Amino acid sequence: MCGNIIEGRFDPAKPFFTSKGSFVSNCTTELLASTTDEDRLSHTRNRCNGEGYESVALIPLRVGTKVYGLLQLDTKRKDAYPETIIAELEYLADNLATAIAGRYALEELLEKEQMYRSLFENMINGFAYCQMLYEDGEPVDWVYIATNRAFEKQTGLGNVAGKRVSEVIRGIREMDPDLFNLYARVADTGHPERFEIFVNALRMWFEVSVYSPSRGYFVAVFDVITERKENEKKLKRDLEEKELLLREIHHRVKNNLNVVSSLLDIQSMDIKSKEDAIEAFAKSRDRIFAMALVHDELYAKIEGLSNVDMQSYLKKMTADLQQIYGRGANIVLSADGIGLDVEYAGPCGLIVNELVTNALKHAFKDIGGGTISITMSSIDDGGIELTVSDDGIGFSPDGGKGNVGLSLVRLLVEQLHGRLETVENNGTTFRVQFKAGNIRPTESMNSYFIDR
Image 1 (cartoon, rainbow, N blue to C red):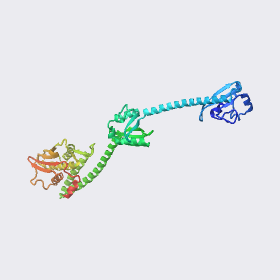
Image 2 (image 1 turned 60 degrees about the vertical axis):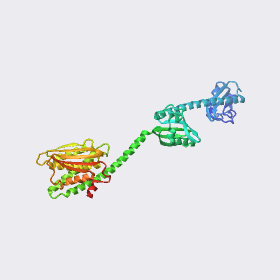
Image 3 (image 1 turned 90 degrees about the horizontal axis):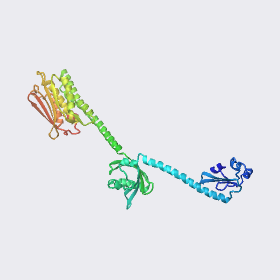
Image 4 (image 1 turned 45 degrees about the vertical axis):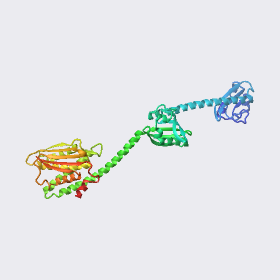
């Protein structure tokens, strides 16, 4: 029967049940003799009657539909629990049940509060619960009601509870009006929003989710994403540089192939015999090597398409020429600290290639050897001076007018908008002066040669 009461199984039409679900018997012997298990809604063990209790009352401790237990009263006297006593007991049971329910609710609330407090304090995201302040309907400030440890860790702002943001972050209202408007809109409308914003007053990027627990209040949950934004900016810049690099490589490869074609055309004009053809091929090979080497030197640089280290570039190129045409000549190079854009390094490399090749092949005939000096230095007003000299036998009487290589040198100097000076004194000196920046961006070596 206790199970019936706890489970809420009762029939108020039967005389031993009350309308509130209590069981009452003032003579259990008579009840058992006059009813069946079916009448009593369950199989009963009749323990109370077996122990001599004639009056039994089972009063549920119930709030709404939830039963927390029951009050059981037993006595061996008959007729011990009239209706008035039962009514008082049910009233008492209702109060006890309410108290028990309140205790359970309080314990559950404290447990949940502890859980949420732990989540609040230990969450990775920054958290700020605030009240928006208005003047004439316009948001002018807000007060921090509560923040968590992540708030302080991410922003570096501590001990802000109870303070206005204008006290905590000076100048934020003037520097970040959009942030005020966003928070005020959420606090006023109750519609949550999520956004990314750069807070000028803190010099930080934030990803913010904000909602309103009640009108005039808002809760901001945020992450500082400054590092992510900087990485995104760097990635975007790198992608743009890579796209520029690909376009530049495409342009230069196309341009260089055209230059190769032009150089071969120029050289072919001087072919009159098999020996001339062999020499023309050798010269073309050297020129193509000079062009390829400038890009090899350029693309090996970690920072990408910027300046060619002329000392390294010319050293590699002249070493190859010396190995092919050496004949005992010594090459001295000085170009430390000179870096040129590829548009200048390419023509300069071809100039050096032509002059050094010419000197190695012709300057030391019948004298066994000598020295070729190459210097490159900065001069006034952003100018560059390139000097190639030798202590050989000197130039031919016609000044090398019929020499294809020297004609190419003059064209290259003209392309640089530079000036070429030739000096004969105990050998031959070629001096080229030009200003970096004189070449127009659309002016390619190929178009320059074809136009001429």
